[in-house]
Image 1 (cartoon, rainbow, N blue to C red):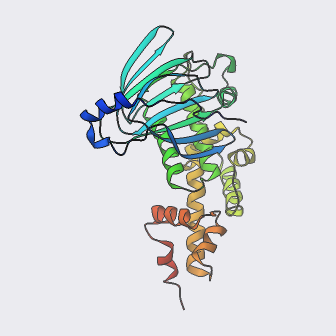
Image 2 (image 1 turned 180 degrees about the horizontal axis):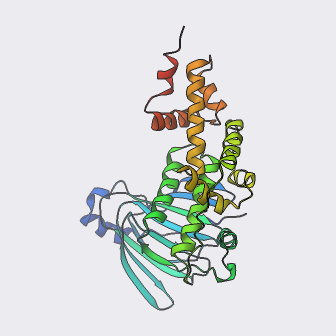
Length: 317
């Protein structure tokens, strides 16, 4: 699977920026002169790119992405103008909303200027259209009728927070948990189908739950593979469900997403090892599936309120 990133070149206008900085002189020395890639991570069904953007961009001709693209503003506020097929759209872009562009979008011209002294930071998330078609099919919908309605400043809280969480994790974590990424990507696809299709339809709401035996089967598998990469497809196959339906049914049964469940189980095992073994914090991190000692420490503190070293200091002599 090949993802296209932000391959468009945005140009910086020195004269326009000079007059713009007179109104917002606080950004004069800190704003980049062109789009700069800060972080990037890719998986089979998702790519996330984080950018530092110029404070002012002169009108630039851009091509549509080859994948579904969700773009959100992480910081700053801009006055945007987009021209396409003889129509002009002008709007203010602020954090909290999402811009959705599909491969069917026509070439367009865009320019913007910042409205605040804050640096402009954006996140671009790319999903292959095949993911949406496959999710629709497993949900009992006709994939041929899956066409997303593009939009700017989309006020979808769930879509924004899922995208924002992924962006923040890419910015701060050296490597995201595979199950977390797959679960979040599946939720993004489901939300796009539920709320942003050009054809109106609702996903079937199947109220079933996992049986006690099925839930125990998943728990046993997770506990046996805490030090390994655990994939959503593997867990779904244990109970003969598609990944989409497994996510919905598992949360309805346990109250947790599969990724939250996995993290909880890893933190429980880590606490046991920290208290009752001679392993170092780095060795415990590896034993429960984290190659990065720093990432494990961050997660452990977030979930337990303690640092791993605090637990090791209390080991009996």
